[in-house]
Image (cartoon, rainbow, N blue to C red; front, top):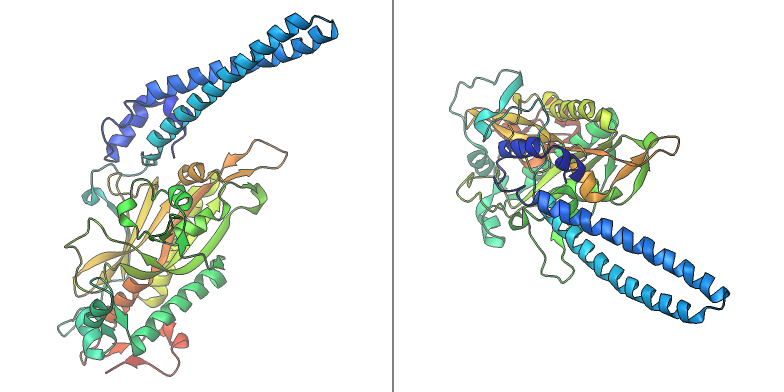
Length: 428
């Protein structure tokens, strides 16, 4: 959530920045009026409270002086002030709710170095790693390879659940398990993340905290339960919310977590896109990286988090490129995002396999997650970061396609062989 004080003092600049995020042009039209009314009510409520306290003190003095009639009149005055204060507090709550509703629907402001553009066409490539392999035979996509090897079954998954689900079997399931273990080992042993296993069901406060609500309700799988639970769309939601409404010690930062979970997304709005295979599923697995850090460290931590995700692809020998997203292509909560895109031979292009975002204090304001520096200073909001390290299903696709051989077998990457002992390739 945006800082209301910053918005108040920089209204035109914020309006211009939100325009680059494709926000509605009238998004801030009511801000000034709501803010003025909210401050007026707060001022009047403070004045009434002061008057009430003064009157209450006067009652004691009048009673002590034996002036009961005057004391009774003052008591009636206090009762009236009490009612007036209660009315103002109700109006203050309504004004606060209106202001919070307005701000909660606004995306984060982009960092100064984010390229300005309305969509992905304005994204900027910043680096590539490894030249894609040249094949001397006609490459197959992961669907044909998986079906021929008996490790991927989309038809039976559709029978069991529906479209956009998959069944992995045999060495295909074993490969996915190996990828998960490999990613977690690298991130925990080499990159210093703490492994954690969060709930797969979250409440609405958690979804609001990381920015999924209220704007992206349609993307969630909500449970038919009066408690308002939803399946997680990403481990970012529960893990980032671990410290909601807490004040951390600055010396404990940064906090770095790696979490493997299944994720569940309705993919509303993506109908007709990536309908073949595993690219866009309702249920998929991901190793998520989450950081909470000091504000002055977030840019450095963002670069490091992105490098940590890239390292997985390097160890697997998979070609990739990294792009910085434009203002119009970033996620709702991000102030800057790097997308890592892996090479898929069957599509002759790079496809997203990780988004690594610096959210600044945007999520922390929604969650109430703060820290205190040494010396008892005033609490400040932490900065939060997250990124896939990596999306497991898309890594599975990349391995299958990049390591395919002319005879239809799949060579196991060297980095995964310790996790798949006794097997050098997948064959039918």
